[in-house]
Image (cartoon, rainbow, N blue to C red):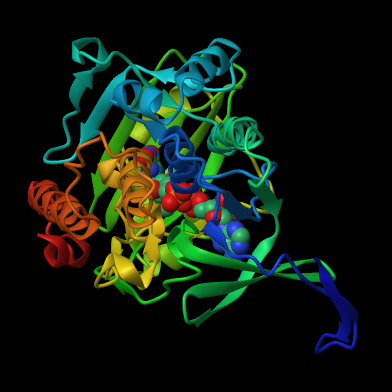
Length: 398
Ligand SMILES: Cc1cc2nc3c(=O)[nH]c(=O)nc-3n(C[C@H](O)[C@H](O)[C@H](O)COP(=O)(O)OP(=O)(O)OC[C@H]3O[C@@H](n4cnc5c(N)ncnc54)[C@H](O)[C@@H]3O)c2cc1C
């Protein structure tokens, strides 16, 4: 039975307030980016028919930063769903994504050090159209979820939550309409906002500012080019349609961070402080895409959420909501996929729906989170200590 109430919001607008079925669903996933999709697909693939509801408010038409998908994804993607890799290859063939041929970085010295994907046993990596990739994952989730008539994917904004006894009440809002849902388990896959968890521990203040450049000439350089400077570091990747994204990372309080958020400042920093990226853009006659929305900034710091003490608390965070990484590591997407698999197994075990004959050797999510974070922190410290610079930005990190 569906109940509906009409009431006024704080602006005096009429709001239709729906209380969905009072029967609690086993699982609600908040956020349907890579982590949410990976969790939903993994839950479905466990074959236990766990009903789930996925809430997401993404706008697939707006640009999303975070485009380098390492070649190792070839090993992980088939675990999510057999169609994910073939869809990615097809979209790359159709020119939506581009192949990345390697990395060139001027980090420890001003000379470029190169690595080539031809030496990688997994093959070439990708520069994705991220919004497009996330949307194609969502359509696979949709096709899988439709097989269970109790599953639902809702385009709606999560707004709040309450816990009572054995269930969660989740509040969500579409313009003008509020919804309530009930669930036994909640998964926070809402990205860096960590809409559910919030108590994020930030361990630095890295901020990324990015802008686009386009060229009419053919640019044959499909590497990721990384360059460190006195106040931070830059990278550029070639996307489809002869467009490059150029990203500057520094501390959010560094004066250059503010300067980079205006086109004039961004271009001065880019051409004044980088050598290789500046030469590449000038050599290929790239022009800035002077769109009023760019340069755009976003936090890029590492942050972790303390995982809940035990599985009986029936909530868990995954992807950036649980642990967000410095973009230097290019490991955000892969980790979100892998952790989605761990989270699905944890929930399934807790709901006691795993087939009995499967011997569960998965470590607890707390152990897994802790080992991913300690490995990441060790590598991050190593990379930042290799700097050729001595500025405040580098001192703090090495
Ligand atoms: C500058 C920068 C560069 C990066 N570069 C790379 C890279 O090259 N390679 C890489 O692997 N990673 C990179 N990353 C990290 C990568 O983008 C993330 O790790 C990845 O997006 C995490 O996926 P996610 O699903 O956890 O979160 P997200 O991708 O942020 O997805 C969260 C989803 O939740 C939805 N959502 C949020 N709040 C709500 C709400 N209240 N209600 C409903 N829905 C909600 C959002 O709409 C979105 O669809 C980069 C990050 C930054 C900041």
